[in-house]
Length: 215
Image 1 (cartoon, rainbow, N blue to C red):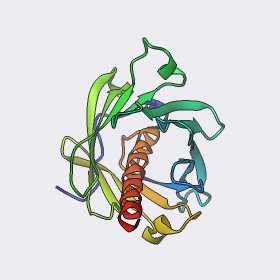
Image 2 (cartoon, rainbow, N blue to C red):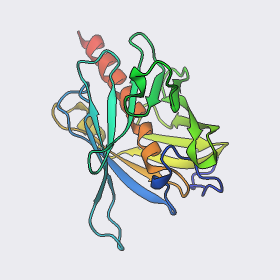
Image 3 (tube, helix red, strand yellow):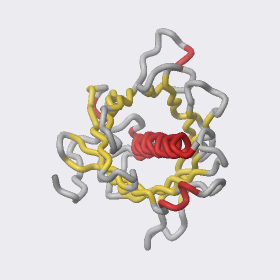
């Protein structure tokens, strides 16, 4: 498969107002002191045209929650989504704010892990708001066993590249890692931030395995 981002003829989105009209690089920074906290800030990386980093979203995690629920807000704090899994499940569900409490509310996206011994591998099923709610599938595939690079594909076309910027930071207590996402034209930036969320969980599993192995 090609390593060049493919512009989408049909945009893919959960929030159409965040569809990018050109390739865009965003940065995801973790701030919590513990891996279970799940607090992040997402900014648009500076460019020659826009030299200042623009805050786009924040993600807050409930470390007490068995479902590891995450709350995604826009730059002003307005809630956009909630992401959580069932207590004993591995599939993640994306709901509109408060939707999880409504038993009649269906998720607007589902993140389904696919088994792989060493690399991140999962599929994202979503109701594409840019195509009248049509079901769309994104394939998220880790590129190395260290989970430092991940590709996102739509029908074989590369639409997002996720890179862990500093592998060492993963193993330093209190130092949150940073990811950079190269997002292709036609992708929803608020949708793109869900992929490093899942890659982060994969990184947590690596740390858990190491702790168990050393105990």
